[in-house]
Length: 306
Ligand code: FO1
Image (cartoon, rainbow, N blue to C red; front, side):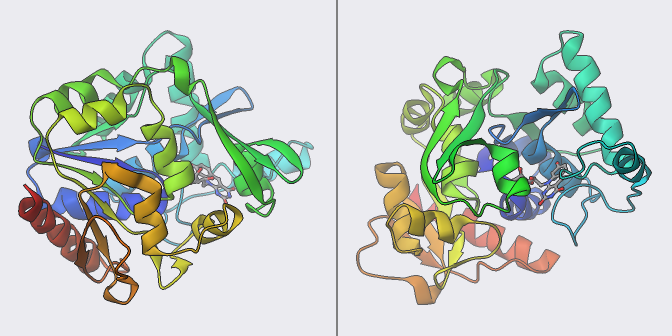
């Protein structure tokens, strides 16, 4: 079993590459839920939905989130009625938020709902929220504390981040099937090219998860989300700079610390101070072939680390 930790669009791309290469029962994808938030009484789970839509081939490639073939009648009408329209909910996407929120209120777990939608969309690999308990990323910026989506979307991640808090993480339990997969001697744990602070951070903040990853005996291999000092997408480079670190593959490796056995990175980003074993590769994923090629390199690196 390959266990892949993912958040955001970069993580979803590698998850798709892995899903093309591995038999469904050999892949377990874990979604960050720290970006989740309540909006108009709806529970919105962006990283679960980006993975769901990407793995189902329904993702909106232009936006990097939400669904393709979308219409925006709800948002247009909301705007005319004076509703907050900073966070855009497409008409098709809205159906998922309404249904999930209804089922959560009826007492179903996020895992059960996510798994039902996965099978209805014919997605093969298991897709697990990192926890069924609520975890919310909040950021102390130079303008005070902000909830994640108002910072990330509302302010385009502009306010500099001084501290990050994963509210609820201390009381949250890692998802049960994830712990079971870790205890069943997985082949590898893959940290996808997601933002280490806000996409992977919440997952690794879950009590006991780092220990369970170590105890699994599986090699842990990350793919650097930084290429030549830049993030492919999103505020990763800026967040390293805000934290006083150079936006580099070396900083990514240092961020994960002794958890990492290997790092897949661009050849140009190789520096002697990187502790884990490095595997140079083309890490920019533009085409489907890129996603599959990178996934192949990640799997080969995992084998080399066993
Ligand atoms: N990101 C934006 O920049 N603007 C939006 O209006 C927006 C809406 C949205 C709706 C549903 C969804 O699942 C994701 C959405 N995102 C939007 C992206 C979202 O903020 C990010 O995908 C994650 O939270 C960070 O990876």
